Length: 97
Image 1 (cartoon, rainbow, N blue to C red):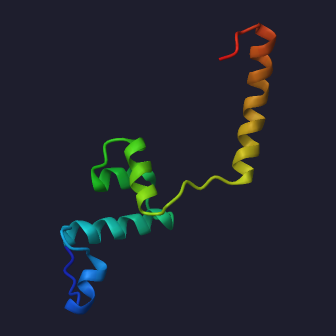
Image 2: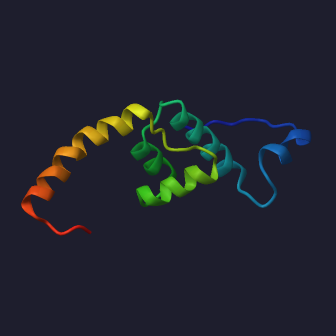
């Protein structure tokens, strides 16, 4: 899909900082907003923007002020999964790392 937009000159520099490709900037802004509002997954965002790894995607999102959503419930669920594994490891006598 190709989309053409017109941005008045008086706002252009505020929307697209000097030295950046306007098309790429608008694509990134739109894609990040779609990710933030759960309309794109991380994998879809990576493919759309040609970001090679999850690690690089995390860095890109951090630069954009989009943080990993990690709730208290997520923390509790991981604890419930991890606790039995840690107990089993302790019972097996595995060395701590």
